[in-house]
Image (cartoon, rainbow, N blue to C red; front, side):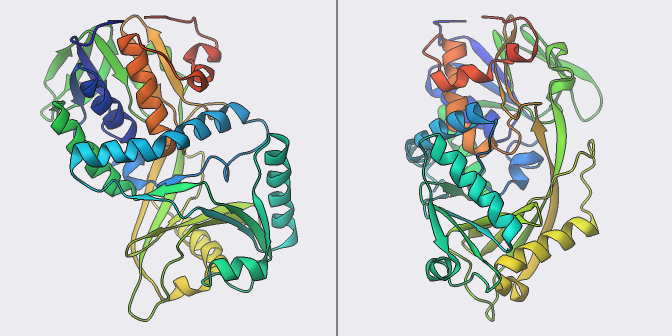
Length: 380
């Protein structure tokens, strides 16, 4: 379909990646059918914290992921402006930045490693004393010993963004097929409806944008993606509680990463990380660790109401880079985004449009070609 914008494209998956790709493909002139039982609800996108933080999450050995994330972060303001215009809904973007903090000397050493690594790549962050950090965010507790300010990071309210994406896709003419896919081959998406009867969607190109179950849809993805469980808590502020922080607060506590992302009415706390297969039950230990670690940074959350505890499955690859590219004739993969689905949505959507329509591919996306995992490179 390279160079054409009038064929049928089936996008399998109604999370942030699938709906972003479907919306942008429809705007580019494609006839798009998005296949998902309940687009925008459930799955990793519904559970996500919504951080857009490639700098704060950088780590030695993941330089291609940092470059891809930074390229997508740069696209987010324009992406959000277009999304708001096309959907008629606010996209939920926040630009206050991130504070990466530590509560003891060992965790502070980890932040020093991060700052030194970023400096070696020409990316700088500002180191702050605990006193300066509390001047920026008064909600921080006395146990915070120091940290880093990352002013360029962004965040979104994931559920508001999903609502906007669904509205933008509908406005652009995307047809929603509310069914589960059970298999993909060139030109065909095999479906199973709620009664178990089989049906199919025929198309010119299939874009696989499901999450942790993507490997079940096509042989080329088997063994390439695994589920990584993450638990999320949602807290609502009460009349007696302090206001939520303006910035995202994150950092290690005894080596465990925890983050607090502000919302209009409270805070989202996440996220545990387990290799637990497809288990999505919330555990007592996960809730206990998240609350204890978050309270060490922001003691005032003790006065908040705990209104939701949820677990989701991050679709992960062995190098944490997504799979963006052809995996068979007529089949594009746009999956495996691990914890970065919202962050990478703009650059992924641009890459999918480039692959399907034959336009330029973002240079940073080439590192995410599925052929890097040992398969043969496919060009269409």
